[in-house]
Image (cartoon, rainbow, N blue to C red; front, side, top):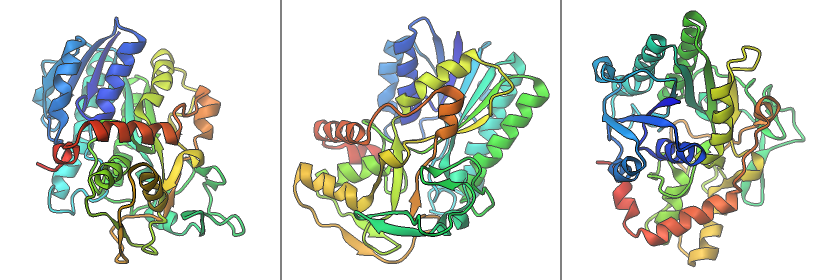
Length: 356
């Protein structure tokens, strides 16, 4: 099987490439990357050593893909994944859409040319900011959690946010670009008759992630805490109760195998894949975990809210279980320990991950 993987030198892309080759060494993987993410160059040699063909390409330019030979499947793992993208001064709104939406369109044109299957790695941030902010929450063990004593909005269960939750804007420019990509991908698949799967992922985390304050938060927090860098709880109650779940990208491998083998139209095309309530943690809880491992380090507070932040978001992946017999395999503790061991072995990782 021949696979094209976009964003292959990013955290998710490189993990998926190595994981797929671990499962089947006969796979022929071609990876494209524009190397815009700081640190992505570190993944070049390990991938090449495994026989991956790397193409330096900018997905915004359709002609950059002209040299790609016939493939069977495309995994679109390339994106600017920050909810602050387009408004933080490092990228423009137009650049964000060019990367996240127009790049996907160019890959879909390639899928159309070769009748290749298409897997889009989407995000939990396609869900409505106002809808998420309206979920009644309480503080339990230093973390926000849904208030079960009150009526929860449609699409919220005790297990988390389901695919039925509102996707009404505002979502952030990032979230809107991914939601638009989902719709376009599904239209291409129906119109030109190739299989499309939309995998909405929670926060991805693990060793080697290029963490920053606006993305890769678990890696950023652990690396910063270990190095005694300034850390701050931003917004809400200023106590770090904001809570997210996390998922290791390699936990997507079993479902990718099944999706490659299935073109069944009866299966739902849009499915959540997240760590869920069991793999969720607040920043305050993460700080306590770090203190137990590395010793005390003060974290300051700033009550001023940040655009597009939400108090609580955990993915309900029940549909993934029903559709693909899937559930996350790696526990939160395992993921955090993996990040910490990598941080201890790479003392300059924060500098490596810094914005160029």
